[in-house]
Length: 274
Image 1 (tube, one colour):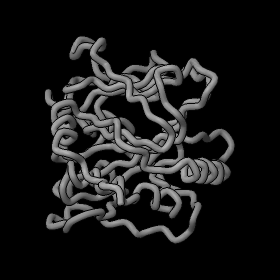
Image 2 (tube, rainbow, N blue to C red):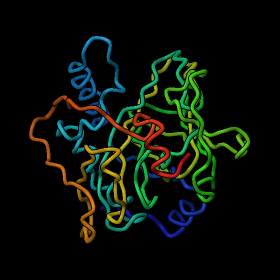
Image 3 (cartoon, rainbow, N blue to C red):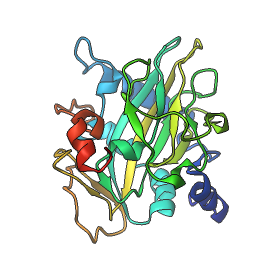
């Protein structure tokens, strides 16, 4: 039986650097094939003009996605880093071959109306990911400096409009998170990260799952749709609404998505970001 717990050295590395890679594959090649087949089924639910970015929080309506994000090995790793925790968000980040789309430097914590900042993201590779096909990059240790200044920009190819202002960190210290299909990376909600354009002939697809300590509370006045699924431990705080486990395998979620970016200036002022 595999030991799915993190070593003390791995936990220390995450604490110091804000990310973790090099873990054994969580999913077998056959399970990766099944995940990609399931993605194809979800894509069939999109309407004309929509793309994979719309498949966001569909774990609330698709048991297929819910089960992936509740994988026991992933939960073991997350528990070692967060203690008692819940699952609350998922979405795909897919860059097709020769895509010009980028993800500008940012911190997830800036986008999420959550307090305190004790959350992380698991990035599940559905393809082999390397520097050639736009692997995600992180700035090691940047999670320790708190929230950086972000500014709105429409003048880039980034899928985000809120990006870190220049000069707050050394871009030449960036580390690319190289993964084989079936592997995962983990990153802290405060670590600065982004990704370049995919200049290769290969797709780069990943599914992200977001997890938070049970002590983390969402500002429901900014995101009233926030729902949690307890993963490990006891929720002694009971800060947030609880979601229902989906019954259908593939289902579309009909809902407006709201983050700090989408909520606009009022949300940034309310959270003390402006």
